[in-house]
Image (cartoon, rainbow, N blue to C red; front, top):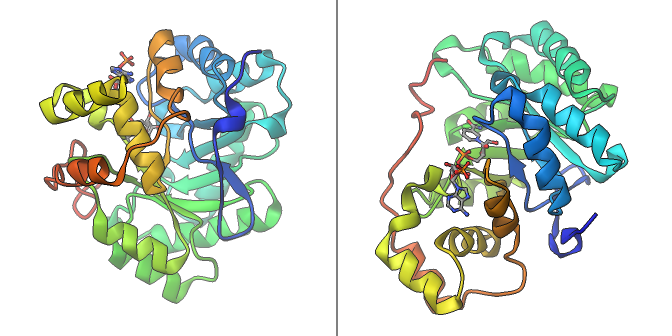
Amino acid sequence: MSTTTNQVPDVELNNGTTIPQFGFGVFQIPPERTADTVGAALEAGYRHLDTAQMYENEEGVGEAIKSSGLDRDEVFVTTKLANDAQGHDSAITALEGSLRRLNTDYVDLYLIHWPLPAQDRYLRTWRGFEEILRSGKAKAIGVSNFQPAHLDRLIEEAEIVPAVNQIELHPALQQTELRAYHQSHGIATEAWSPLAQADLLGDPILTELAGKYGRSAAQLVLRWHVQLGNIVFPKSGTPARIRENIDIFDFELDAEDLRVIDKLDAGRRTGPDPDTFNG
Ligand code: NDP
């Protein structure tokens, strides 16, 4: 199997486990195409897969890992709790379903997908996650789409600080304050929709800068994420783009060009606002 795996740095999480900084996201990959698409990603050297119960494609992820011939411990697998399964016991039961569909004994990372503050169940859910961590069925636990107030509450009232917070993050939504919060609390930042779902790729500033490095705009943006320290997992259903996206470990943006991208921050979301999203 051809591989660029060794070029992807590992990031150490706050419980001592490590995660490849660069991976592959499978949101919106249709279930019947997931095994082939994830197979192409593994072939291209990706060793970190990001799925979720709500994506309804965990089976395909499990199938691709199995048919790759890789050992289970060579691939980092994240899944996320479905919104309608929040709660202490239901979070534990939902993970059993994921393990069955993924055909594995454990996940590397289990996340609460959304805080759903109006439902006020994330603290109880997190206590279920703490039990899961102790059971070994997840090697690390974390959250997604949590705002500082939600994180404050977990840190004050629960035992375990989330290992990661997976948030929408790209040049048009740089999340500077939330990233600083993460850093001061030992929480790793994962960036979802790192390409803003391809919205940004025609931006003239980005395309011009990409040309300077002889790269695509997607590669430029992904390289920016890596240099910022974000954990990132772009999605593509297109084999050539799958290979293109991971081919970013042989060039480096200089400080001035990083600042040019920093100036594109517009506080613009492509997805829901976590404070009001209710599942
Ligand atoms: P991305 O920002 O990764 O963008 C995906 C889009 O970009 C697709 O339309 C894809 O097209 C296109 N694309 C990818 N690479 C290229 C390229 N090199 N050139 C041109 N176009 C390209 O969006 P996602 O929303 O999928 O985010 C990535 C991952 O983040 C998800 O798969 C999921 O794992 C996670 N996520 C988590 C969320 C959460 O709430 N926790 C919410 C949303 C995402 P094509 O497929 O046709 O190639």
